[in-house]
Image 1: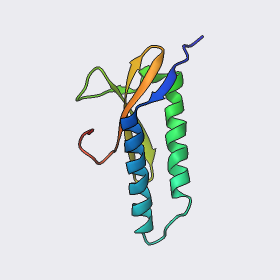
Image 2: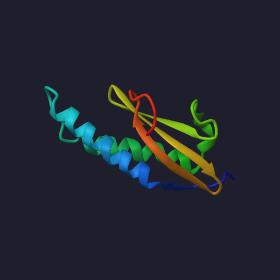
Image 3: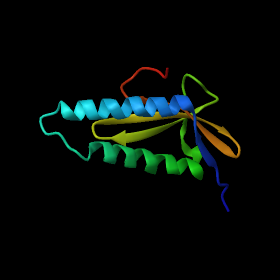
Image 4: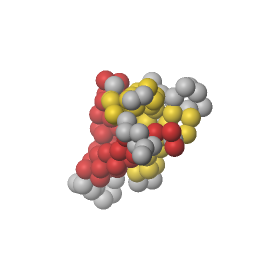
Length: 106
């Protein structure tokens, strides 16, 4: 039987998520064919991907900048985002999130 982890979002992660949601909406509104479901699809992609962390966080890659942390890559559209997290049994702590095209976490 596998271990069940509790996924806990930090304040920084929540702020990053709000920033990315705003970016997604702005980018979509500026496109030639805006999609009013874009934000809902983004949130669904985030939720599905993060659910993996509740049972298999060790499958994600180690962070190149912070070896004690791991990264979850979440594809979305022509890009996606990367979630930085730490495993502190029995918790998985969501630390930060960034667009895949950003160079580093804040």
